[in-house]
Amino acid sequence: MKHLKPINRKAARIDEMVSLEQEDVVALQGGPAPHVPMGCTLSFSPGWEVDAGGGTAGLCQPVERDIYDCYVTCFWPVQVPDHLNYSPDWASNCAVATKDWRNLDLVFP
Amino acid sequence: MKTRFLGLCAILPLAALAAPASAATIVLGGYPDELQLVDDATGAVTQKVKLDTGLPVNLHMSNDRSRIYVTTNTSSGIEVFDTASRKIINKFSLNTPSVRYRFNGGVPDPTGRYFYVLGMRMDKEIDRWRVSKPQYMVVDLQQKKIVRAVDVAPEDERASRYAQLVLSEDGKSLYIFRDEVVVVDTAELKAVKRFDLAKPEFPGMLDVSFGGALESLRKPDEYVSLFISEDPYIHNKVFGIARFDLTSREFTFAPVGPAPENMAGLEVTPDGKDGYTVAVIGDLGSQRCEFWHFDLTTNMAVDKSEFPCRRRFYFGMSPDGAKLYIYGAGFDIAVYDAKTLQPVQDWELTNDATMAGMLFLP
Image (cartoon, rainbow over all chains, first blue to last red; front, side, top):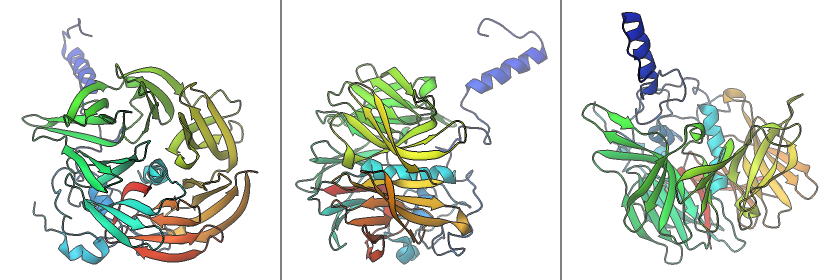
């Protein structure tokens, strides 16, 4: 394609499509998943509403076990502060999330 | 996405575990920026080590057990922990205001000067961050910067930054373990050989892949791993122990038992006779977790016992093989007796554990 030039609009669109496939802009539903560095905003994974026992004690709850992994890797059903890109200090005063969650910082958009 | 997380749960603790018989101190990553040193007998946190570069995501013990290489992701940092003095002796961040890196763990070269990682580079442009292809990177631990970086070949890009890296003893070959084994010449950072494990040379085997290293079984110049294999006819899955000779590059596989839906790794006692795994059956509200105990001399299942699942957890074993640990996604380690598979006690830590894995200090 390097030595060919489109001479009508359809050919131009094909050329543009091929060029886009070679760029780093990818569809979100396609693989590989564009996990970084896009942040947590685009990560949405429902289905974590109950834990292994049908309750919530072992689940990703805001003041329970797994908030930090969700915070760091963006694996979270809703938006949380993003450690890698926007809010690296959000949990800097909170060593144990289940006990010290009041020390989590406030984040304003 | 969740499946990948369970897979990681299986890989990371195995990758990090190195357990001599005399070990008595557990090393764990702790939120937000700590190493936690825990007494293996009492569960008390005896020391906390602050990591200035941020949150630990991987721990790697050097072959001579004198250093622990900690990679952190807050600022893409590397910190070197001296196991004798129990202090950080080198630390730096690779990020700059206009360049960021993403990588997980890495391996040091035999001299201890260079550190190999598989990662990506992001350059800040006027209106976006431009993300590089996955790259093999060589970090100079003295100059505290990346001195060489080469794009991963397109056919090897599926080996993500979570792949296991192993360096040969002479430092000339870097092995990337994932669905395939990629052998990289460290002089040129170029793949020189590939072993496609999805098409192994064993009759009747397919869909195989390497997991984390089984350090307790490892010999010099050999990579030992948990391995799941499926036959092509009735799709019966079995797990076993795979060995990859880093010198001859030969691969052997010894099946152990039926593979459950998800396994949280395999832990092997120091004498190599007993193996333990955690089977995760079902998901969400119907999820069940069981310890499985195998006699590795006969490859027979000996015992099993259910225990309370956590939504995300890691599985470990004490260096003497007497205790089983369930930890992660929280600030405690649930301790079980390896013989009876029954709970013994719950150790409360001072920090939530990160996904960096568990090491044992000499």
